Image (cartoon, rainbow, N blue to C red; front, top):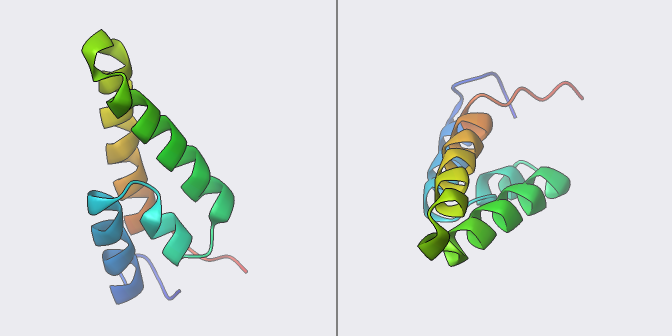
Length: 74
Protein backbone atom coordinates (compact mmCIF):
# COMPACT_ATOMS: atom_id res chain seq x y z
CA UNK A 1 0.00 0.00 0.00
CA UNK A 2 1.05 3.56 -0.53
CA UNK A 3 0.43 6.28 2.01
CA UNK A 4 -2.55 7.06 4.18
CA UNK A 5 -5.51 8.17 2.07
CA UNK A 6 -4.30 6.22 -0.94
CA UNK A 7 -6.76 4.55 -3.27
CA UNK A 8 -5.96 1.17 -1.72
CA UNK A 9 -6.91 2.39 1.74
CA UNK A 10 -10.12 3.93 0.45
CA UNK A 11 -11.07 0.65 -1.23
CA UNK A 12 -10.21 -1.25 1.96
CA UNK A 13 -12.36 1.11 4.04
CA UNK A 14 -15.29 0.70 1.63
CA UNK A 15 -14.93 -3.08 1.79
CA UNK A 16 -15.04 -2.90 5.58
CA UNK A 17 -18.24 -0.85 5.50
CA UNK A 18 -20.05 -3.79 3.90
CA UNK A 19 -18.20 -6.67 5.61
CA UNK A 20 -16.24 -6.07 8.85
CA UNK A 21 -12.64 -7.18 8.44
CA UNK A 22 -12.68 -7.43 4.65
CA UNK A 23 -10.60 -4.28 4.26
CA UNK A 24 -7.93 -5.66 6.57
CA UNK A 25 -7.98 -8.88 4.56
CA UNK A 26 -7.52 -6.91 1.33
CA UNK A 27 -4.50 -5.24 2.95
CA UNK A 28 -3.05 -8.65 3.85
CA UNK A 29 -3.65 -8.41 7.61
CA UNK A 30 -5.33 -11.74 8.29
CA UNK A 31 -5.24 -11.67 12.11
CA UNK A 32 -6.80 -8.19 12.32
CA UNK A 33 -9.45 -9.23 9.78
CA UNK A 34 -10.40 -12.27 11.85
CA UNK A 35 -10.62 -10.32 15.11
CA UNK A 36 -12.78 -7.56 13.62
CA UNK A 37 -15.06 -10.04 11.84
CA UNK A 38 -15.53 -12.29 14.88
CA UNK A 39 -16.26 -9.43 17.30
CA UNK A 40 -18.60 -7.63 14.89
CA UNK A 41 -20.58 -10.65 13.74
CA UNK A 42 -20.74 -12.08 17.25
CA UNK A 43 -22.04 -8.79 18.61
CA UNK A 44 -24.50 -8.31 15.77
CA UNK A 45 -25.75 -11.87 16.26
CA UNK A 46 -26.45 -11.08 19.95
CA UNK A 47 -28.22 -7.78 19.12
CA UNK A 48 -31.10 -8.52 21.47
CA UNK A 49 -28.76 -8.13 24.48
CA UNK A 50 -28.08 -4.54 23.30
CA UNK A 51 -24.58 -4.21 24.86
CA UNK A 52 -22.89 -6.69 22.44
CA UNK A 53 -24.52 -4.87 19.53
CA UNK A 54 -23.15 -1.54 20.76
CA UNK A 55 -19.69 -3.06 21.16
CA UNK A 56 -19.96 -4.58 17.67
CA UNK A 57 -20.95 -1.21 16.23
CA UNK A 58 -17.95 0.44 17.86
CA UNK A 59 -15.64 -2.30 16.55
CA UNK A 60 -17.15 -1.95 13.07
CA UNK A 61 -16.44 1.78 13.08
CA UNK A 62 -12.94 1.09 14.42
CA UNK A 63 -12.35 -1.43 11.61
CA UNK A 64 -13.35 1.15 8.98
CA UNK A 65 -11.04 3.78 10.45
CA UNK A 66 -8.24 1.23 10.84
CA UNK A 67 -8.49 0.21 7.17
CA UNK A 68 -8.58 3.82 6.02
CA UNK A 69 -5.55 4.96 8.05
CA UNK A 70 -3.30 1.88 7.67
CA UNK A 71 0.34 2.57 6.82
CA UNK A 72 2.42 -0.32 5.53
CA UNK A 73 5.76 -0.24 7.35
CA UNK A 74 7.16 -3.30 5.60
